[in-house]
Length: 78
Image 1 (tube, helix red, strand yellow):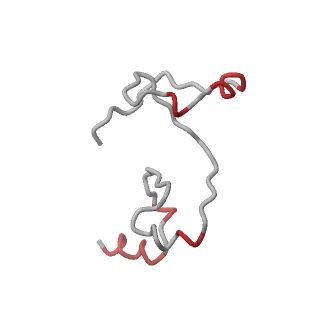
Image 2: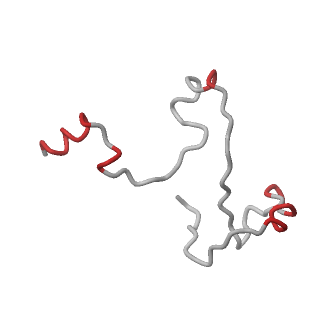
């Protein structure tokens, strides 16, 4: 990653601010960044075409409770 990450002063936009918000009007080098939560519709026919890099990947930390029993068996053996 080459861009700075958000570290504070987080806030939600109010309903009236959301109506006026234009994501495509935010400058790429703006001092203010935005995290946008949205629902995506992604045609199943495209899944295999994009399997090497999914449409909307997310950054998360995998915890033990997310692992299958097969994966857990590798952890226990090491």
